[in-house]
Length: 212
Image (cartoon, rainbow, N blue to C red):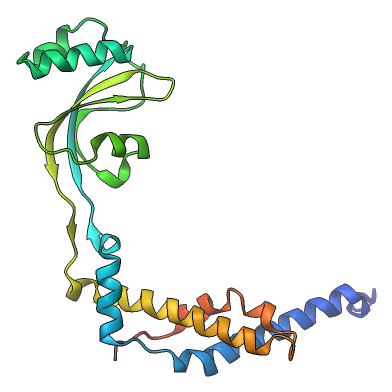
C-alpha cells in the first residue's frame, strides 16, 4: 500500500483520523464519563417497579385444539363444547375439521411459553385460564378451537434476584445520558461528538456496575 502511495490518499488519511478519534473518544468515555455514573438503591428499586414485566418469568400454556376449515365451523363447535359436548369426541368426530397439514400451528398439549407464541395467538389467549375455550383464526388460514388445558401465570422475579440486571439497566441508561450530555458540550468545540454515538455501549460492557 505504501509503495502504491495509498497512505497519501485522502480516503486513507480520513480513515486513520477517524480511527484515532474513535480511540480517543472511547478512552475519554471509559476514563472520564464512566467513573461519574453510579446507581443508587432507590433508583434501582424505582426502575424495577416501573419495569417489573421485564423481570418476570413468562406465562406458560398447555394447549389442545381442533382445527376447522372456516371460522363459522369453529364458532359452531365451540358453542357445542360450551353446551357440554366432550372435547375428545369433538376432536375426533366434528364436521368441518381441516385436513392434516392445513396449519403450521400445533395444539397437542405440550407446555409452551407465552413468549414462544406469535402475537396474534397471544392476543387470543389474553386473560385465559385453565379450562377456557377460545377461537383463534389465522390470517388467510383456518380457525382453531383452542382449549386451555393448563396455565401457569407469569410471576415477577424477586427484586433480590433481579437486582444485578436492574442495576445494569439503570447504569446503561444513565451512561447514555451522560455521554449525550458530554457530546452536547463538545459539539462545536471539537469534531468528536459524532464518534460518541455507540461508544457508551462499548464502555458499559467493560464497566463494573455496583449499586451505592
